[in-house]
Image 1: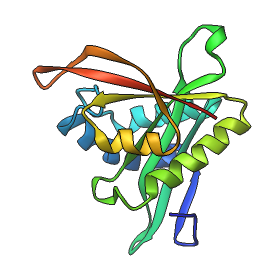
Image 2: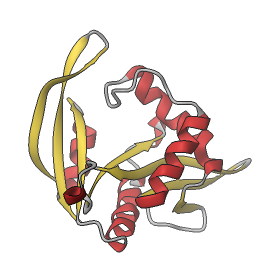
Image 3: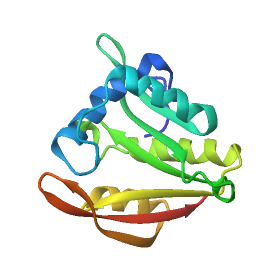
Image 4: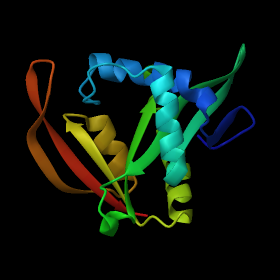
Amino acid sequence: MPTTPDRRIRPATADDAAACARIYAPYVENTVVSFETEPPSPEEMARRIEAATAEHAWLVLEVDAANGSEVIGYAYATQHRTRAAYRWACDVSIYLDQDRRGEGAGAALYTALFRALAERGYRRALAGIAIPNEASLGIHRSFGFTEVGTYRRIGWKFDAWHDVTWLQFDL
């Protein structure tokens, strides 16, 4: 899904917060993809966008819709760890409207995100994936992410323990 006149990837702004919150809410409410238990408000999402764009990046994919443009997905990076030696690494995440998966939107967003991160001097991207999640493992592996380890029974959600597998990618 390359950028075309009817599909654009651009840096997120606070104006995108409501759309990002809408996209993210089903992942929080219905899956273990996110370990959050309450969907963040648009105001909280705006704060997260501002924090991510200050040092890393937050991109949205918008498409033309009947009533204007519509954000259908986003990808972002955040600090991996707080110690100075980790400053060249970041954690990455991607979320798409549930009905827009499998169209290449995720690959387009990640391609643009990884380019932006490399331009900012980052060298490693890491992704933590709650298991099972073959779709997320698949897109990450397609970019060359390799597994570096699994935290066993680390997250408690929906009355069960869940593993998180960590993957790493050289930008």
